[in-house]
Length: 291
Image 1 (cartoon, helix red, strand yellow):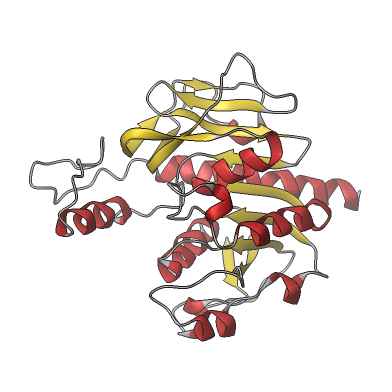
Image 2: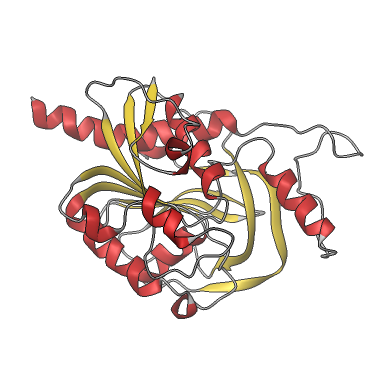
């Protein structure tokens, strides 16, 4: 129905039009991506196409050393934890970040990220971690480590197993295709036969490993890929690396022709369904409380 931005670069630059909302759900987005404005648009566009009304507030880590943008601009357009710490939210999304090859402890905002996660336990109903953030959340919650892949996992990949008893995969379990963009150099070190207590794999692929994991204890969903990615995102990443002279292979299952001008935008339905199913978790909680 409608997604409004409470703050952010798009709103400041008048590139997103808010509309009057009633009975909206509140979502906090810790935006760790370097393409901040594009990432804002991706999430707003996705939630704008869901059933329900949503207000998105964008959060930044104060301890981060920013590149490519003035920290003063971020401080002016985003909120920090201390500014919203008294608030309660229906959902928290923590995005991926281009720091996956670093040990967690070497990420400049690592301690602040853990503080935000700890704060969310009592102030947020459901948390959604994506890509690097999923690896970070699994490490913090279950001490699951990550390791370097021989080459970048890059492309669009289908799940080969989908749980039949998870709210997050409703609509996929009876033959539906769950398709996910992946763009990462690391993988979680997890034996599917020896899962930590309180963690379950909801969707996985032989090619990519776990795609979605869930923990009811922490009210958390961990997604190894980027469901928010728009049609052109992987192409931009690919041509960026080509222009840098990096040894990068084409994203798998993505381009439709040899000259890389046509894209198979095949994951949009999956992304919207995942976001809708995730949002339904806290929407249903609100409905139960109102009875």
